[in-house]
Image 1 (cartoon, rainbow, N blue to C red):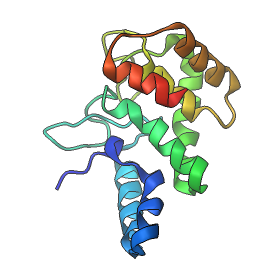
Image 2: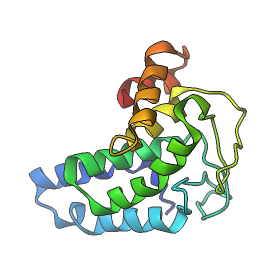
Image 3: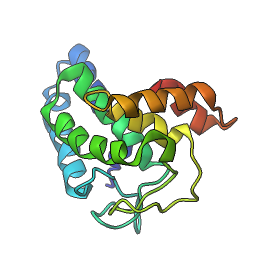
Length: 165
C-alpha cells in the first residue's frame, strides 16, 4: 500500500479515536504517518511528489499535492501540540520565510530550487503561511495579504486559500 504524506490528516486521528476508543488511531497510525513524513522530507521540509507511484526523499518535486503538507502538519501542532509536527514546521517554516510570501511559486525541487511553472497562488502560499504561524510573522502576514488580494478562479487553489486563511 502506498501512503502519501500530503494526504494524511494527522490532526484528526485523535478525534477519530474518541468515539471508537480504538488505540490504533492514537498510536500506530499517527506514528506510521510521521515515520513516512520523516523518511521523505529533506532538510527543508519539502515533501516530494510521487516518483514511480511512491515517495522517495530527494526524488520528485514539491508540487500541487505536496503543497498541502505544511497546513496539515501545522494543524496537528496547533490542535494537539504534536512535537513531530513542530519539528517538521521547524524545517519548512524557515525555508518559506527565506523565500518570502511574495516570491513563493508553484513547485520546488528537494533542494529548494523553483521547479514549477513559476505561478504564484494560494495552493502554495497559503500552506506556507500556516507553517509560519509560530515565529515568522512577515511570512504569515504576507501569505494572508496575498490571499486577501488574489483569487485564482480555480477550485483547488481557492479552496486552499480559504482553509489556510
